[in-house]
Image 1 (tube, rainbow, N blue to C red):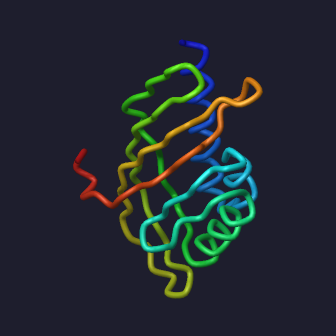
Image 2 (cartoon, rainbow, N blue to C red; image 1 turned 90 degrees about the vertical axis):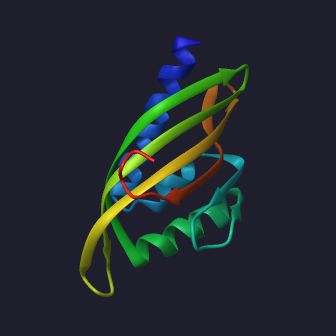
Amino acid sequence: MPDDQNAIYDLLKKYETALNQSDAGSAAKLYHPDGVFMPLGFPSSRGHEQVLAAYTGIFNTIQLKIAFTIDEIEVDHNTAIAVTRSEGTVKVRALGAEMPEANRELFVLRKRDGLWSIYRYMFNKTSGQGD
């Protein structure tokens, strides 16, 4: 299990990097082929093409500078959950305005051909006070 937890930790750190670089392609590649992205304020996206389009649209609108705190990783065979928090800033590109950003996230991950990927992902806004 520690190897799986380390691999999931690395995956989440790659995801954090993709978000901070506004790299839709790298974010989408971290998803399982049947992965679902459920972003706040946008429709759910399923599969690589829809997930890529969703991240492209989001990154055209905002720029993130966030850091994840990983609170929990639980592995059960080829499925895992990860609970995280993120804090930082978000810049609305059209306005140039930067404001605090804080979320809590739930990842469901799947292992396929020995590699972990994001199977389901959703988040919601928090006050940034550890809620």
